[in-house]
Image 1 (cartoon, rainbow, N blue to C red):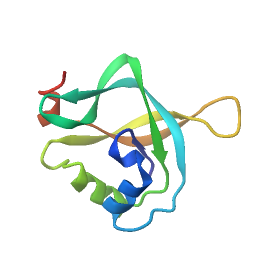
Image 2: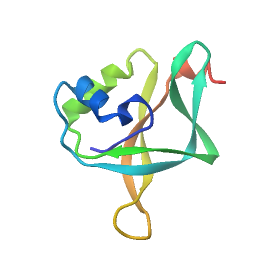
Image 3: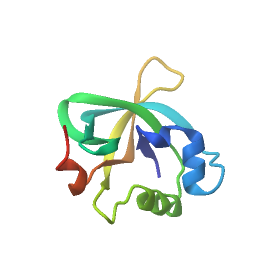
Length: 118
């Protein structure tokens, strides 16, 4: 499974800390169209909301296991409604002049965060 990240998980050390092991999978520079990175009142971390004309730059993490995603869901407090994980298509760049479009998952603001969006 691939995961598009745009906040604290962009830092490989943070990802390793959250997963509890040194993650050796591939990471690609990526862009997610149709979303905007925002912050909420009283919350220090960014989250995504849909915005047709916007895009968010980040990193695509490849080869995460279902167990990894369960751990990340707990970190992002999905069950508590802070974030929710959704399927998306991201634009990535490799060795050629044209981007590739790949399916992935990402975390967007859950009900608790959407109500605080500024």
